[in-house]
Image 1 (tube, rainbow, N blue to C red):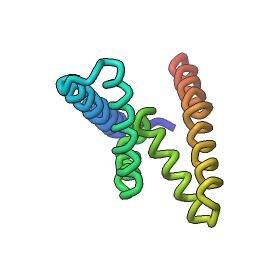
Image 2 (cartoon, one colour; image 1 turned 90 degrees about the horizontal axis):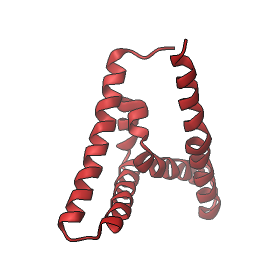
Image 3 (cartoon, rainbow, N blue to C red; image 1 turned 180 degrees about the vertical axis):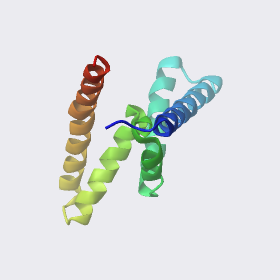
Length: 128
């Protein structure tokens, strides 16, 4: 199954906008005098917190629907996935510790196995 050109465009635009936002946060931290190495860590934490908040508010899912894979950048998509799966487990009646484990497990499965598998499949398909 192949995507429409407009789907690729949205994926590129959403992914690019997330990267630009991360770069802006990073530059703001540097201009505030934060050390380079710490700026990277803080930028990742800030972007993860923002994507988590957007997931809780139901907005990140809209980005994923519009931007597809472009919205699943690891520094934002990972925290959104953890929160989304944890919330689903809580709705099923799991306790917070159990729901947290389920959320982490699902996110690690997606990003640790699913993402490399998708890249590998795409690479193989490019040689057709």
